[in-house]
Length: 522
Image (cartoon, rainbow, N blue to C red):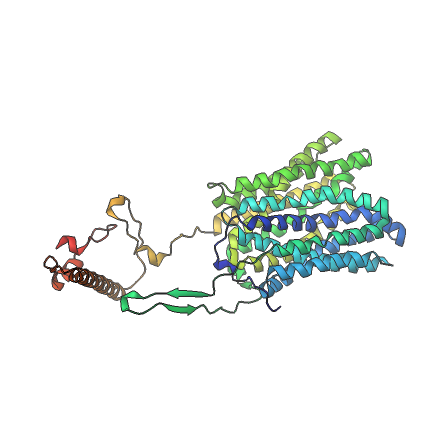
């Protein structure tokens, strides 16, 4: 990959919070829409595939399952590639894979070919776009990151509202083969979005000047430390472990209601079109819920407590499932979809924002890959497990009760463990707190905590500090003397005794006050 700017050290660069970052946000919006909506949009063609290849609905359902499994399960692979080559080239290659998979699938002669082409190849291509786009969004936004995450997450419901009707039109006009071919061309836009991911490259050299010793500025080249392609040290972070466990439990039940709500409505005796309208209502509410939640999460008094807002969103979502399980008519399901859309949008807007806040920019590329891998297992287990429960009980109420219980449990795990086991870190290192002083004019108190040092170390540190201050004063006096001598003025007014200065420096000072200038005291 010669000539490619690898952006793995972008954490050293301050996030611009705007500028080209808005174009990165546009690209992330489109990629998020394709990644989450495409597995659902492909289901439009299932009836044609059943008729073409003589298979059952369960066989065609594996297409969407494989797509989702590739999207989540290849997280560590994406992290390795991003850490090795950077986000932009990985996304460009991913766009080609996504398009190639759908184009090859249009020439399939068996359902196995579609599994390999649409499921594996297209799924891998979408995965190579989804994860790097989130990493770049994290690098370009810091203060406005909650809003940026909320806006990018809104791409999922917007794309779902667009791709599903488009798939129906393509199937009616060109059949499933023509529809796959056109969708393959549409996925080439992932390459365009990848081209928008301009890397943030830190400066390679740092110039240091040492005027005290009379030396000229020296140029020091930063030696890049060799970083692991997949950083497993994130598992040493308690916050990351807690988040991963809670997110895995949440995914078990989060995606179950959207899958079964239409069938639930049909079971009540409603028409197909009327039942399908429930998903449209849910998606429409979701479009506005995600950006709104991003704005709320960005408030000054909310952002430090973003983990608890995320826990509230999960409790809201799980409680909605529990109450929705008691729905008896179509109007009750409409109310359920409205509240589920709000809570689902909140969870979608906050899940990656919380992860970014926990691990930071430098480790996010590895952390998101490992989290997605853990969630992939839950995604494969959750909906099929709910389906088996439905087959055993023949009652949708138990399916919704199970999903709600799992989501509420994840919220309790996240909030309780975060409150009990995560201690707030001081923004200032402890060993630097002793050196903090506030000027007398500011009339404020300086907080200081004694470092755990021995008497000898304290004595040595004080002597070193006194020598440095004495040296600075002598240098200052020397400079003033040279300036007045150059102007032809005799420096009679400057007479400083070194013993007197040393005596002054050793005098005890009040805590929290800076030393006055020796020139004004003598």
